Amino acid sequence: MFILGLTGSLGMGKSATAKFFAEAGVPVHDADAAVHALYEGEAAPLIEAAFPGTTEGGKVDRDKLARRVFGDAAAIGKLETIVHPLVAAARDRFLREAEKHGAQVALLDIPLLYETGGEKLCDAVVVVSAPADVQRRRAFERPGMTQEKFAAILAKQMPDAEKRARADFVVDTSRGFEAAHDQVREILARVGRMEKRRR
Image (cartoon, rainbow, N blue to C red; front, side, top):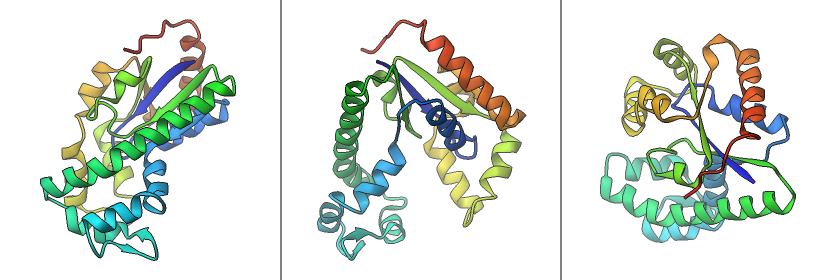
């Protein structure tokens, strides 16, 4: 099975691109969705023990947790030691299932793929990109986006130019989503002929 990594900064159109892969029959593991599920399940009691008062009704209150860890590197590190192993276990289960069901290609949708070394799990990486002005416009269409939030998110992410330089494929969403859809089809045609390179 060929494992594709998908990444892209905020507002680049990554979620829409992941959907195009899913529509083409590729099983998709969404790292953000996995975290959401963990926050409503097995991670909640562990997070409550580490950060008392950040859960309600057995689920993590994301706003309370964000306020507790924002700008505190030690707290973020503590949270990551709880969440990352659980996310990794969910990802591994997904890959085993995909392989068991005979998938030729599986997609790992990971926002901080390069930042966390996730590219080592993949045979090739797709970066979703768009010019900075398009990215900014899309980001500020999201509810609750502020200048401070936008800057903080970008500060955590590798610059787009660096991601593009490291990627095997770049999907440019600035030409509209039909063009992006075509690019996804082209990538899938090409990965069928590529060598696996997982380390």
